[in-house]
Length: 412
Ligand code: SF4
Ligand code: SF4
Image (cartoon, rainbow, N blue to C red; front, side, top):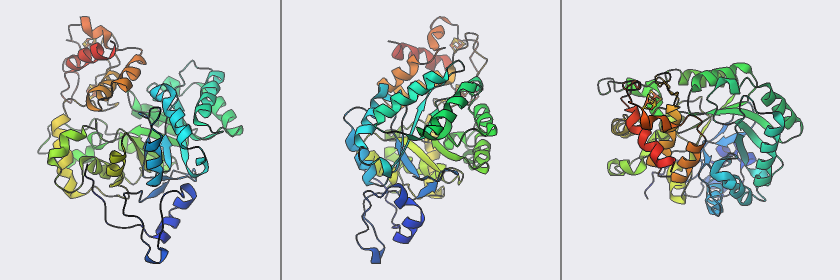
């Protein structure tokens, strides 16, 4: 697999100034300090302060949502490349993700930052939250996580549960959690982020964010697109989080990650993923992104975009082509305009997200696990006329045509 490797080498002075040595200290061999050069292997080229946490994280970081048992080598490869922030959750791969990270990071814990998550619901008690955290710590073989997220929040009532805040305070006092955050990528995302930020009780946000959700992408191509991004408020809440000193990490940056579709159009410059990352990181209020790292080749390709802070004009046509190809099948996480159209209250955006895992990522296991967690799945679509939701998506998604096969595939 080819990858675009930016030619500028990071200098020793810049590297130290970035705070990277405090955060990683692994794998980057400064063979000749006098020449201020480093290995030619792809590597992390920028470490960003994560809000006011004092942490400096690799701008392109390890999403461990698809990490399975026995894949420690992937983690070691990422470490060798300078990645120092690892994002997992208690339910990724049924706990295998945390277990594998724990094994891979043994002896290296002080050189990395670990973020994990658990879903606290409106009725979840703090004792159950603590049990979930302690389970994560056991699997991760550590006594603390650096960031602990309330996972995949799509209902503001989950943020109004006072038990979460009592749990978080206790966990921090006991040294089990350094900082807390809210993660989200589905319904009511902007509303939940606004609430979390305004509460002043979280240090970090983790949210879906990509060129397909940002109106600034489409402004360049108004003559080409007859639809606009439906997340006009997402850049605003990201800016607000940053203005409050919070850390901002983003995910779902590849708008479905159909990387192979774009290979024929990559002509020796940046790959599609690098172009998409460049777009995301051009928002200077984004501290870093996480992406599922499933092969060493993919890690090297992704790191070709590390250090980027501009959306390169030359790469924009790739993004435009991708948006044209997939704009009418890709559900823009959390846009939720269709909410309320369904009399059966199907969680359409959640169903679409698991469809993305299955069809775009090609990861049936992840898709089935995600689908089984949806309380209002698409079973009702099987016997529905589909009239209520017809035309409910302003992006042209034919909702029932997507939800029915998704249910058949993922409920089997
Ligand atoms: S189906 Fe359409 S309207 Fe509904 S969440 Fe997805 S993109 Fe938005
Ligand atoms: S097909 Fe029917 S049940 Fe399914 S989302 Fe549309 S309106 Fe709801």
